Image 1 (tube, rainbow, N blue to C red):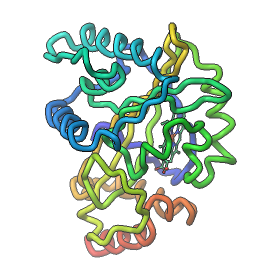
Image 2 (tube, rainbow, N blue to C red):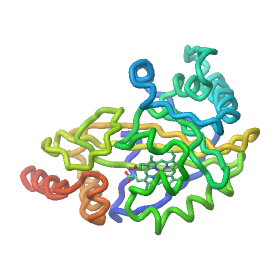
Image 3 (cartoon, rainbow, N blue to C red):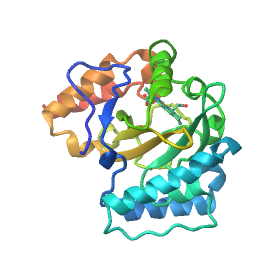
Image 4 (spheres, rainbow, N blue to C red):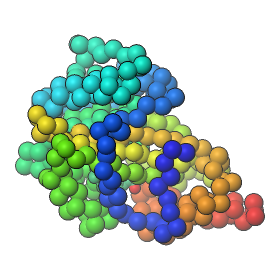
Length: 268
Ligand code: HEM
């Protein structure tokens, strides 16, 4: 697994921002071909579910496409890709990288001005476009009291010279990258058929348009592959068991701690 944002301390709602070097902005791996093909299919069949644009995103979208193509040319010169000039620049950018791309623009507040999100983790893009960072996070338990103010401050102070990245993770009963349904019911599948899903997110301010680009890269691995790793399992169990009830409900984890424990007791 590329990223395992777990430790012995258990569940914490934290920003966890780390400095991001320009050469690490976006990541390319062996799933590139499959994931770009999946994006193409979603754009062809469900464009309104994966693309949301407001006029406020226009200036930044062109700059974003320039940044993405320059990044690929410099950091991954061996990759073959082309961008369709008839496509909207934000979508053209999202079609050549594995990341989902969001353009945040400050008007009265920072708002999601436009996005191409093909791999949502149980949320709907159409409900978020045009809304503020606080409104986007309204369903997240504890965000309002512990993360809203620091996140607003980070957005206001972000400069083009210093970008950041962070990780989010969850457990889901489906490996699908495209999960737009907001269903929070705990899945019925046996826990060893669940998946560990990690989002690597970056924030970066664009110098010309002054917008902030928020990228989300999604990594999914079968939980079964890591159940033999005692350290991973201990940390996972500590996190799920110490998560507040509201968080467990939000994440669809109701009963998951017991299922994990039962599995481990049987295997012990
Ligand atoms: C540094 C800034 C940010 C922090 C600290 C942050 C933090 C979080 C956290 C903790 C969650 C809950 C995820 C979970 O537990 O599974 C979340 C969910 C989410 N975040 Fe952020 N986030 C940030 C920026 C953004 C931005 C810029 C967007 C813009 C699109 C965004 C979109 C979302 C969405 C759509 C969800 C799911 C909300 C839902 O369930 O309806 N986040 N975020």
